[in-house]
View 1 (cartoon, one colour):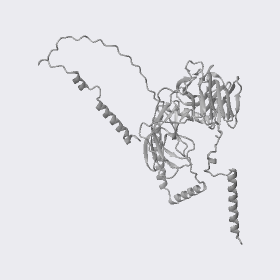
View 2 (view 1 turned 180 degrees about the vertical axis):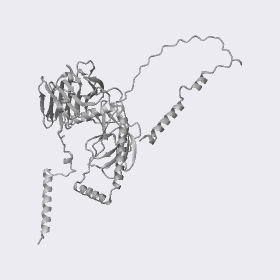
View 3 (view 1 turned 45 degrees about the horizontal axis):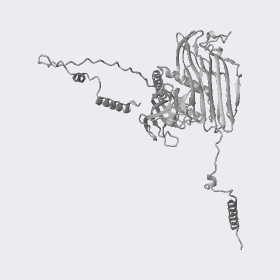
View 4 (view 1 turned 90 degrees about the vertical axis):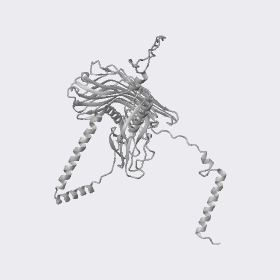
Length: 551
């Protein structure tokens, strides 16, 4: 029998499959994806590839008139990739360091000690950090002969030693983490050398202490805040001081500085964050929130600038129409050639954008895609007590773009928001909405208004709204409103005079009867009736739902 080549190959393949089937039945090595052998397979948890423990002592973010920069007296850091233990300089000594700007303007000095440890032993992962600082100075104009002259410092810590501590532990490769943050401690600070205006260290996660005082020939505004947060897989303990130094008489800005006196932080399963930019931004936002005229002046300034730009554009447009045809053609050809030589790459913001409440802003993705516009109309924050987690309610108005693709703004949910403590984003919690919610799905080219509610730590000074594909938009959170508990005393008993049996005098025609109390109440009507209350409530709800107040 003659077989073709195709038949030979087919017979060989069938024979090979039969042999493999026999081997599979005998040994049980091969199995289908839906076989019980695969179904009973167990997978172990992969180890966390991120984590850190960091101690920073007297980290300063300077913004001088001529130069700006960052400076750290001392630090120690270990990560998952570089596990170990570091004491800097050691367990008992201190590091003295200082830094100044151009011509010595704006000098920060301090003594510090740092400890950081990150260990891995199988599924046991631990990170710990401690930070100490003392003799912290902030000198706007130091002496060239003795730059560390304390008499010129607007800040005096005297004998106070500041301390912060955190630790993070996990026994299952980072799946579950137990973070712990010790509130920063210290004896407080003074404005000006040998002054009596002592400012104690604020309670952790409480409202920051506002600074408004004079020191060594300057006027100093600022805030002093203590943060101790242990949430999710991270812990942070830091003591932040923000100072805005101005001349005493004219209040001309001289120096703006944010100092983290001590900062200790750790995490398991998360990468090392940037402590520099986030904390400085958070302090600046808190300063902006404390200034009562910041929001009132911003719209007018923006209106003036927009009007100026509009007039300039109109004048330029009118002047362009007066050009000769040859000039127009030459300018058009040159602009076309320049555009051809230098292609423009479409790109949006790659870092979070600060927005003001009540200000409409464009929502642009990092790749430059226009997602629409939005306005944070109102932000409310309430808490059951001081320092307790707050419930934040955000009223938003959003107009989606006409784009109808996968990258459009299709929804807004509480999970798109995150509170920020010390510039570090925290995990939000879900909370019930008290007002009308935004729909689950947003369609292109439409305008929506509604509330989004989430929970936040009481110390959160900012929050970020981060739609998918964007770098996010940060806004200032108000201080949580805490219900005021009042104590009422029991009124003393009233002794009623015994009733007499004297008959009441009947009114005569000459003496009209006195008005009854009911008639007086009807005339004065000091207390609204239930019907009036309900009408007032319904009218307020109707006015709240009026779309005219949404913009």
